[in-house]
Image (cartoon, rainbow, N blue to C red; front, side, top):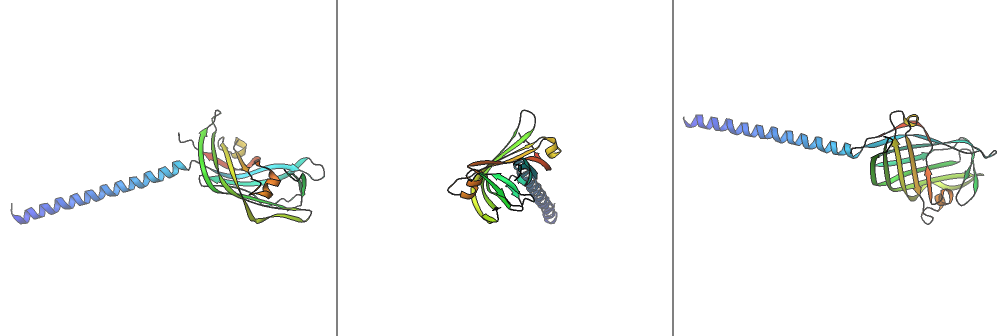
Length: 218
Protein backbone atom coordinates (compact mmCIF):
# COMPACT_ATOMS: atom_id res chain seq x y z
CA UNK A 1 0.00 0.00 0.00
CA UNK A 2 1.52 3.29 -1.07
CA UNK A 3 1.89 6.25 1.26
CA UNK A 4 -0.87 8.26 -0.40
CA UNK A 5 -3.41 5.51 0.19
CA UNK A 6 -2.22 5.09 3.79
CA UNK A 7 -2.58 8.81 4.43
CA UNK A 8 -6.09 8.76 2.95
CA UNK A 9 -7.15 5.84 5.16
CA UNK A 10 -5.69 7.49 8.24
CA UNK A 11 -7.56 10.69 7.42
CA UNK A 12 -10.84 8.78 7.03
CA UNK A 13 -10.37 6.98 10.36
CA UNK A 14 -9.46 10.17 12.22
CA UNK A 15 -12.44 12.00 10.72
CA UNK A 16 -14.77 9.18 11.72
CA UNK A 17 -13.42 9.20 15.28
CA UNK A 18 -13.77 12.96 15.54
CA UNK A 19 -17.28 12.97 14.11
CA UNK A 20 -18.32 10.05 16.29
CA UNK A 21 -16.82 11.66 19.35
CA UNK A 22 -18.55 14.91 18.53
CA UNK A 23 -21.88 13.13 18.20
CA UNK A 24 -21.32 11.33 21.50
CA UNK A 25 -20.44 14.56 23.30
CA UNK A 26 -23.44 16.26 21.70
CA UNK A 27 -25.74 13.46 22.83
CA UNK A 28 -24.21 13.46 26.31
CA UNK A 29 -24.67 17.21 26.56
CA UNK A 30 -28.31 16.90 25.52
CA UNK A 31 -28.89 14.20 28.13
CA UNK A 32 -27.25 16.29 30.84
CA UNK A 33 -29.44 19.28 29.91
CA UNK A 34 -32.55 17.08 29.91
CA UNK A 35 -31.65 15.66 33.33
CA UNK A 36 -31.15 19.18 34.70
CA UNK A 37 -34.60 20.16 33.42
CA UNK A 38 -36.12 17.04 34.99
CA UNK A 39 -34.45 17.90 38.32
CA UNK A 40 -35.92 21.42 38.15
CA UNK A 41 -39.37 20.05 37.35
CA UNK A 42 -39.10 17.51 40.16
CA UNK A 43 -38.21 20.27 42.62
CA UNK A 44 -41.24 22.35 41.58
CA UNK A 45 -43.94 19.76 42.26
CA UNK A 46 -46.55 22.14 43.69
CA UNK A 47 -48.13 25.30 42.40
CA UNK A 48 -51.46 27.04 42.38
CA UNK A 49 -53.45 30.20 42.62
CA UNK A 50 -56.96 31.41 43.11
CA UNK A 51 -59.23 33.20 45.52
CA UNK A 52 -60.41 32.47 49.04
CA UNK A 53 -63.51 34.13 50.43
CA UNK A 54 -64.13 34.62 54.13
CA UNK A 55 -67.09 36.27 55.83
CA UNK A 56 -66.54 39.14 58.27
CA UNK A 57 -68.94 40.88 60.69
CA UNK A 58 -71.41 43.41 59.34
CA UNK A 59 -71.11 46.78 61.12
CA UNK A 60 -74.79 46.90 62.06
CA UNK A 61 -75.78 43.30 62.72
CA UNK A 62 -72.29 42.04 63.73
CA UNK A 63 -73.14 38.85 61.86
CA UNK A 64 -70.48 37.35 59.57
CA UNK A 65 -72.08 38.23 56.24
CA UNK A 66 -69.56 40.59 54.56
CA UNK A 67 -67.38 38.77 52.01
CA UNK A 68 -63.63 39.42 51.95
CA UNK A 69 -61.74 38.25 48.84
CA UNK A 70 -58.16 37.04 49.32
CA UNK A 71 -56.20 36.32 46.15
CA UNK A 72 -53.30 33.88 46.48
CA UNK A 73 -50.55 32.37 44.38
CA UNK A 74 -47.64 30.05 45.15
CA UNK A 75 -45.02 27.67 43.79
CA UNK A 76 -41.58 26.46 44.84
CA UNK A 77 -40.19 30.00 44.77
CA UNK A 78 -42.99 32.30 45.94
CA UNK A 79 -46.10 32.62 48.09
CA UNK A 80 -48.45 35.61 47.87
CA UNK A 81 -51.73 36.53 49.55
CA UNK A 82 -53.42 39.80 48.60
CA UNK A 83 -56.51 41.79 49.57
CA UNK A 84 -56.94 44.73 47.20
CA UNK A 85 -59.92 46.38 48.89
CA UNK A 86 -63.31 45.88 50.52
CA UNK A 87 -66.34 47.20 48.62
CA UNK A 88 -68.48 46.84 51.76
CA UNK A 89 -67.68 48.28 55.19
CA UNK A 90 -67.23 45.70 57.94
CA UNK A 91 -66.09 45.29 61.52
CA UNK A 92 -62.71 43.70 62.16
CA UNK A 93 -62.12 41.84 65.42
CA UNK A 94 -58.53 42.74 66.30
CA UNK A 95 -56.00 41.32 68.74
CA UNK A 96 -55.20 44.48 70.67
CA UNK A 97 -57.78 47.13 69.67
CA UNK A 98 -61.08 45.32 70.03
CA UNK A 99 -63.71 45.47 67.28
CA UNK A 100 -62.67 48.13 64.77
CA UNK A 101 -65.07 49.47 62.12
CA UNK A 102 -63.39 49.42 58.70
CA UNK A 103 -64.53 51.97 56.13
CA UNK A 104 -65.80 50.98 52.72
CA UNK A 105 -62.74 50.56 50.46
CA UNK A 106 -60.67 51.03 53.60
CA UNK A 107 -58.67 47.81 53.82
CA UNK A 108 -55.58 46.74 51.89
CA UNK A 109 -53.14 43.97 52.71
CA UNK A 110 -50.41 42.14 50.83
CA UNK A 111 -48.15 39.36 52.04
CA UNK A 112 -45.25 38.45 49.76
CA UNK A 113 -42.72 35.80 50.71
CA UNK A 114 -39.13 37.00 50.65
CA UNK A 115 -37.79 33.47 51.13
CA UNK A 116 -38.95 29.87 50.92
CA UNK A 117 -36.76 28.13 53.48
CA UNK A 118 -38.49 24.74 53.65
CA UNK A 119 -40.64 22.94 51.08
CA UNK A 120 -42.15 19.54 51.78
CA UNK A 121 -44.61 17.58 49.62
CA UNK A 122 -46.52 14.62 51.07
CA UNK A 123 -49.59 12.46 50.53
CA UNK A 124 -52.36 12.50 53.12
CA UNK A 125 -54.26 9.45 54.37
CA UNK A 126 -57.27 10.36 52.21
CA UNK A 127 -55.14 10.34 49.06
CA UNK A 128 -54.92 14.12 48.68
CA UNK A 129 -51.48 15.66 48.22
CA UNK A 130 -50.11 18.48 50.32
CA UNK A 131 -47.26 20.95 50.33
CA UNK A 132 -45.99 22.79 53.40
CA UNK A 133 -43.71 25.78 52.98
CA UNK A 134 -42.08 28.04 55.55
CA UNK A 135 -39.99 31.17 55.32
CA UNK A 136 -40.03 34.93 55.74
CA UNK A 137 -42.28 37.58 54.22
CA UNK A 138 -43.12 41.25 54.11
CA UNK A 139 -46.64 42.31 55.10
CA UNK A 140 -48.07 45.64 53.91
CA UNK A 141 -51.31 46.68 55.61
CA UNK A 142 -53.34 49.85 55.22
CA UNK A 143 -56.58 50.43 57.14
CA UNK A 144 -59.04 53.33 57.23
CA UNK A 145 -61.39 53.54 60.20
CA UNK A 146 -63.65 56.58 60.54
CA UNK A 147 -61.51 58.32 57.93
CA UNK A 148 -58.31 57.81 59.95
CA UNK A 149 -55.50 55.91 58.27
CA UNK A 150 -53.48 53.22 60.03
CA UNK A 151 -50.47 51.75 58.31
CA UNK A 152 -49.49 52.32 54.69
CA UNK A 153 -49.63 50.04 51.67
CA UNK A 154 -46.09 51.16 50.82
CA UNK A 155 -44.72 50.23 54.28
CA UNK A 156 -43.72 46.62 54.91
CA UNK A 157 -43.38 44.78 58.23
CA UNK A 158 -41.40 41.52 58.39
CA UNK A 159 -42.82 38.22 59.62
CA UNK A 160 -42.43 34.48 59.26
CA UNK A 161 -45.01 32.18 57.72
CA UNK A 162 -46.22 28.66 57.10
CA UNK A 163 -48.19 27.84 53.94
CA UNK A 164 -50.21 24.63 53.71
CA UNK A 165 -51.88 23.89 50.37
CA UNK A 166 -53.87 20.74 49.60
CA UNK A 167 -54.69 19.27 46.19
CA UNK A 168 -57.78 17.08 46.26
CA UNK A 169 -58.10 16.65 42.50
CA UNK A 170 -59.09 18.67 39.46
CA UNK A 171 -61.78 21.21 40.24
CA UNK A 172 -60.19 23.62 42.72
CA UNK A 173 -62.26 24.43 45.77
CA UNK A 174 -65.21 22.37 44.59
CA UNK A 175 -62.96 19.32 44.56
CA UNK A 176 -61.66 20.12 48.05
CA UNK A 177 -58.49 22.09 47.33
CA UNK A 178 -57.48 24.42 50.17
CA UNK A 179 -54.87 27.11 50.80
CA UNK A 180 -53.93 28.47 54.23
CA UNK A 181 -51.30 31.16 54.88
CA UNK A 182 -50.39 31.25 58.60
CA UNK A 183 -48.31 34.28 59.57
CA UNK A 184 -46.36 34.88 62.79
CA UNK A 185 -46.05 38.56 63.77
CA UNK A 186 -43.55 39.79 66.34
CA UNK A 187 -44.73 42.83 68.29
CA UNK A 188 -41.30 44.48 68.13
CA UNK A 189 -40.82 44.21 64.36
CA UNK A 190 -44.43 44.18 63.14
CA UNK A 191 -46.36 46.36 65.62
CA UNK A 192 -49.30 47.23 63.35
CA UNK A 193 -49.97 43.71 62.12
CA UNK A 194 -49.41 42.28 65.59
CA UNK A 195 -52.00 44.70 67.00
CA UNK A 196 -54.50 43.72 64.29
CA UNK A 197 -53.89 40.00 63.86
CA UNK A 198 -51.95 38.98 66.97
CA UNK A 199 -48.83 36.80 67.18
CA UNK A 200 -50.33 34.14 64.87
CA UNK A 201 -53.09 34.39 62.30
CA UNK A 202 -54.21 32.09 59.47
CA UNK A 203 -55.44 33.70 56.28
CA UNK A 204 -57.73 31.25 54.52
CA UNK A 205 -61.34 30.80 53.50
CA UNK A 206 -63.56 29.00 51.04
CA UNK A 207 -61.68 28.59 47.76
CA UNK A 208 -64.09 29.65 45.03
CA UNK A 209 -61.69 30.16 42.10
CA UNK A 210 -58.42 28.71 40.87
CA UNK A 211 -56.61 25.39 41.04
CA UNK A 212 -53.94 23.76 43.16
CA UNK A 213 -51.72 21.08 41.63
CA UNK A 214 -49.37 19.01 43.80
CA UNK A 215 -47.47 15.90 42.70
CA UNK A 216 -45.78 13.79 45.36
CA UNK A 217 -42.47 12.73 43.70
CA UNK A 218 -41.97 9.92 46.20
